Amino acid sequence: MGAVSDRALCLRRFPYSESSLVVRLLTREHGRVHLLARGTYRPRSRTYALLDLFDTLELTWTQNPRRELGELVEGRIVRRRRDIPASLPAFRCGSSMLELAHIGSLVGQRDRPLFDLLERSLDRLCEPAIPAGITGAGFELGFLEVHGLSPALTTCASCGGEAPASPRSPARAAFSAGAGGRLCAPCADQARAAGRRVGTLPLDALDAAAVLRPFATGTGGPIELESDLLERVRDFIARFLDYHLGTRPRTHQAFLAAENRNAPR
Ligand SMILES: [Zn+2]
Image (cartoon, rainbow, N blue to C red; front, side):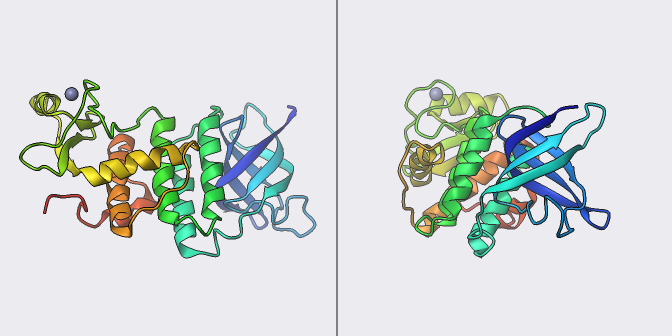
């Protein structure tokens, strides 16, 4: 039962007994890890005030393969991100990212791209020049990409060809979450015939998401979007995620309780 050390981001925390915590973490090399932090609320503990959400931590723990919970031994804060809980938009957005990272990770299964995406996105939430909504939408696009679920935004998801606007509604293109995103007219007909739901999305929202995606994955520079357009981009990404996760994240519920913001007028 050797000790293990790794970088970690705290996803969820549960009080346990009077002075302890159970924490669920996303680690860089060990996937999701569940640890018991004994006595962490005692000021003399080696892990006192260590396990805050949003911070990058370096932790050492022991893991008994016959037990579900490892035991935290010690740790340090590598990067403290106080700016996130200090700002409501950043806090909401950060909480949603942690929830998605929890849904999208598995115990003991290394997922370095997800860890890197989450850490980079938390860093961005601390940059006042980048609106939290941009970082959040970018994180969700990156989350889909990490899991091989990137929606087709500029070309047809089915045949890979061009997917122009439909003649009947010139500013919109066919789109189906089940078929993988944007569709050309013949592939949209095929998808409908196969029983898939096919709707349409405004071209400006698809184009904006296509510009946002490289920013999410770390290769593009920051972008600016008008708040109405950003809201519509967030709407369709959140609905696309819903479809593929098969569950609505708690942190999406209020946002998605509104009507589809991209519905034809
Ligand atoms: Zn096609």
